[in-house]
Image 1: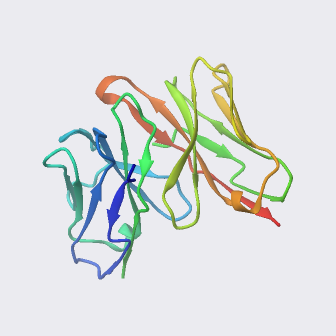
Image 2 (image 1 turned 45 degrees about the vertical axis):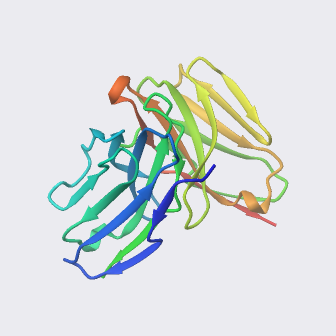
Length: 114
Length: 113
């Protein structure tokens, strides 16, 4: 089966610019996660979707970050405006259902804000 | 919040040796999972152990879970250079729509050929 697809793989932007990341989960997976991973740290959950509804966005900096999963399939994560501390790898993952948390990850998008 | 805490933070061994990593957590769990991350890549699921299980094997991997001590260990036997990666434990906590994975900071394993 095809894995979780993410694009772009790399992105370099200046601070205060905006950026968007795209994720297509494994077909049939109802739960989708966006994580932020800073170098040397574990993944930090930004937002979790169950189908097209948000179940957890408690750690999403909502003044600058937004995410949507309109049709319950693919998802976009946006940062506007970006700050230097947003430099990180943004990982998308999916799992079959919310009560089956074995997660399948994409390759991630490495964001550098200069 | 970080529930899982792995130790050691970094481990360097010779090819053929065994590598042991530990994970401690604070709250009750549904299951505990171990993942591997190669440099610059996404995470790959290795093994899942349920809260009512004590030990599980998968190839060269052996995972133990002690719910009384709220700890788990991952043993990689006969390590290979290709095992060089970061290893993370993730605890599955909560119920219903509040169910989530909480991640540790990881152990960086280096296997020298």
